[in-house]
Length: 142
Image (cartoon, rainbow, N blue to C red; front, side):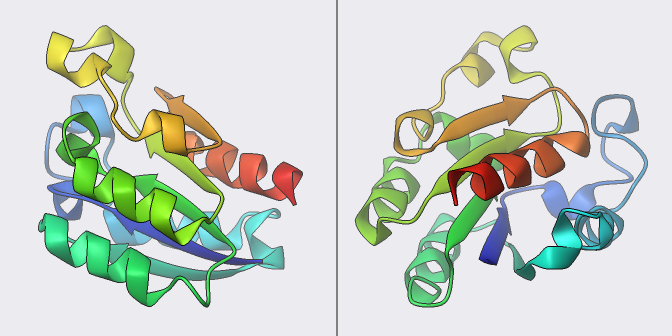
């Protein structure tokens, strides 16, 4: 399966931004780990990170013919980006929303996801394992 993994704003700072919440691994280390897990080795990945909403939308559009699944950690865009939500819905690809931290037990604004209803599922609070669980949801959908 061809899987696009999108990481949104501030995730380029993984490893240095609030390691007590997000861990010590960099985004590159996390993505390399996902690709080399037993589940990941069976699939082809493209990884993308942007701090800009429009670039994320363009990435979803540009990969619509290639991808068969989407794992997205939209960061703060999760809580208010109807444009990203609409892009996911428009391409008609199976998607899973993931978060490293437990968004349901943080600030009240983080408890809201405008993406959740256009995704197969939402995984949060498992650290990097959230990405692996998201991958498993896509695999089981296949």
